[in-house]
Image (cartoon, rainbow, N blue to C red):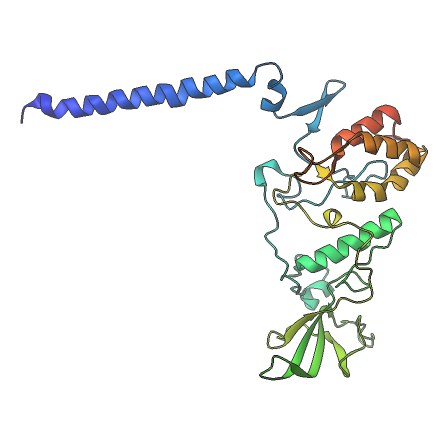
Length: 314
């Protein structure tokens, strides 16, 4: 075979490589960048960044937390919904917790490690999605001065879940012989009385959960309890978005924060509600999505109108 016949296809491949590199690696990205710099598009292309007094404070499209160095909410700011993106609102780790509605049983902490001074997380404690929701609802209720109880949560703020062990029947029922509150561990202090959210279930005394015991053979039964069917703390206040970066909260979550923010800023709650209303967007095209409030834009507007009273604020 002539040498030219061997070289020809390689030259063709090289030409194709160079042309595609030029088009897809240079011309196309440059064209997209140039279009993004057109008036009306540049802000979006640059990340919808927001500056105040020449200082970059965030993006209108990416949520952020409004807490102090210890993670405590700053009283004069509206709070965002929780985030499972990295350590919270990490744009490089966008995502949810990947916990679903059936995740209702906690992984308990090792009592020996707790007694040695370890914190619950390093001692092995891993809260279920239900307990995370219950705990956060209780904390927000206390922060905002509203009822933080919700169905399927204990008064202590963990998932109200029983493991019912006994005789299982063909019709799907079970005759309980032993009932354990799986998310309420037994006390480790000698003589301490065990506390459970429910005294008995179908005539059987409810026990606390003992570390190391396996209750997987039992039927898992969440207990709704006496909490209101529509909790005062809305769902978006206790659950993260799928991306973990949602910059919005619902008007209902904003509403329960008004009194706290108004008190911290020393203004009339009606004035704060007016600012919330100004930053409340309706459904897209009148029917897509839900009404929403951009937290960063709301807090910045409040800073302009009613500067936070605490010295050294964020």
